Image 1 (cartoon, rainbow, N blue to C red):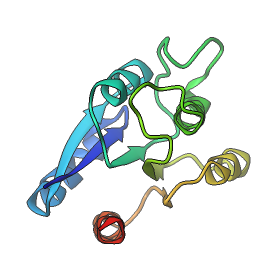
Image 2: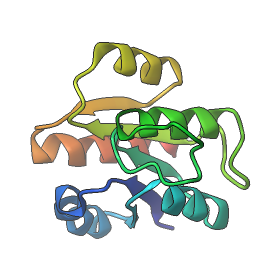
Image 3: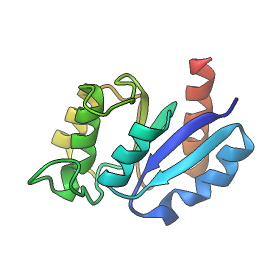
Length: 138
């Protein structure tokens, strides 16, 4: 059985290189490019892991006055508080972001993420992070 991963990332060229390698190793990768698409996919499909960028277009689903810089934080808060139907509040989350803001990073870490990776990052470090997390889930 494949491990299902939802990548929440507005710049698909930043994550597509990982898809082939991960899919060769038992992962099924899906992309959501904004808040509405992410919430829709989380409500309609079961995922084992979320890969979350911090900054993306929030859309309407994340609420009013949500800026792109905190869209990922808001989405993670909604997940952890059980506000997204059919989404496990304890789902494993890997943050993969170029955002370098200590206050936001601290808030994200307090919401319980498996790994917090800052771009730019070595390709194989990302792949190894997924492999290690999958191994720990078995």
